[in-house]
Image (cartoon, rainbow, N blue to C red; front, side):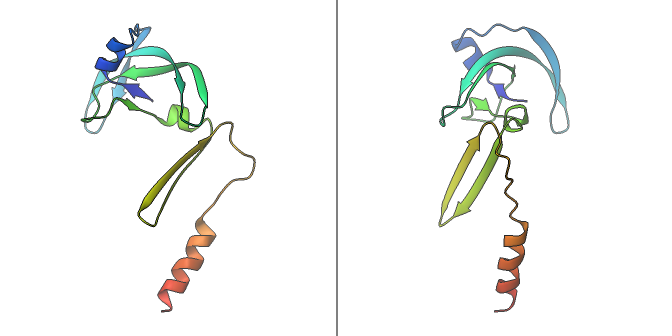
Length: 112
């Protein structure tokens, strides 16, 4: 589930609509749930998204969770020292599977 910090929720005057149990690594907590509209950099906009209010790691104000990621196609690519993040919504009909490409590359690397 996506989340924002209590500081961001307060700054945006977000009002709790519910409370839920959120499981973490080795523990759980009870968190407020708020409704927000989220616009991602690629102009994808989600209205009335239900997200939790949680303390996140240092210098992180918001976490985009699987509740949003599963609505589209999400990709992370790394190469030449750079990371590329892309997200498209709605998802495309043709799926990208890197398995065959990885097998070919790894096969070639093992023959050298």
